[in-house]
Image 1: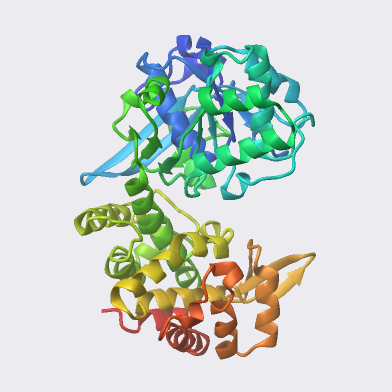
Image 2: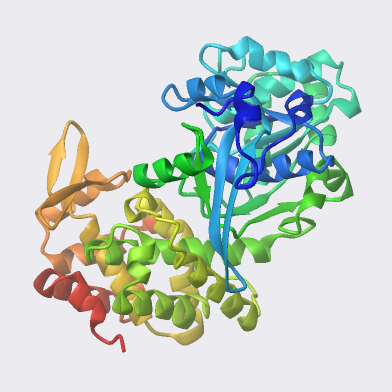
Length: 500
């Protein structure tokens, strides 16, 4: 039996939270660009919980821009999917199964663009959410008349222009736009792109004023580990327990946070925030952003290569190893927590770091290191290089564990095979894919340079880092030493040196 509206009546209560049928008839109030696990595991979770408590009373229209994936599954299951929450809170094991009924329908941008634009005529659809990955918020010379425009900002401004025309530019037709892409000032950056596209498309002063005064683009931060679809055997066991099959099932940790920068008007529009203290609407969210960006994402990034090349496929495997766990804990609490490039009280940083370590140990989350390595170089620049520079400002020397992690990153980017424009590294005789825009560059310098000279080239790459890292006294020498040890003795043994 497949999960669907018709089959809800046959699902056994007790082991799962089942929505009332009335929720499936709520009006559409949210346009969401993206269908991925993070959106379904966090924003859509809050909306679903609010609907079940009679607070928000609105459903989501998802816009899918890629051809691959799960659009058909959403149609087959009437937008329903199972969220399996697995984690630890205050020492207690959390296991919850929730049928999420927040999604009304999924529209494919390439074939249903007119239907998407028609949503702009819905007076209730005044909230827009997005997660199009970090590269989604970029300026592309889009034309809003295209069917559809190629970029996410292009699609968004086309929707907003359609709404502006539909309601004659009325103030009440304005929207609140909340991007969740993991970049700094995501709302401000998106708004700047939208305003530039307005100018390039010559959409007029009146529309520009409506964009400026009637719409709010909110910076936001999402924090929940949502690995997505569970492993086959885990999914099969859950389905047997619940009594139905679900092609959209996802797993998420119990910890959750959505911090949104906004005023009372934004808070009123996002009425679902009242359902959970983990939704924060505040005038300034930088503290939340920095803690999460550095102590969760930054630690993931700087430890990724060291853990993967030591033989661990996912985070929980690494945390179950005494040496690797100690390395991750030490680099987090001794180096990163003490050099966050933002005024963070040390106790707040250490407290947040302790919670992150508990999340890393969650036995139900098998967060793959190779997934974390996606666009590894750009993540290193965004998440970790500011920490390195701040460490030097504070302590005037090289962070030794950070140097180990950076050396492992360089070794991880060693290209051992190129095939049809794709690049692969090698671990224990097996190839792994390098999904990184700098892979071709690393392939070239690994072929042309000895490790010592290669480190110098990497550190001097100001186009990548925004700084000449070779000028950091002692850092190049330390990275070279660690890289040579890793190539001679292996990453695991090198990491263990100095770890008690």
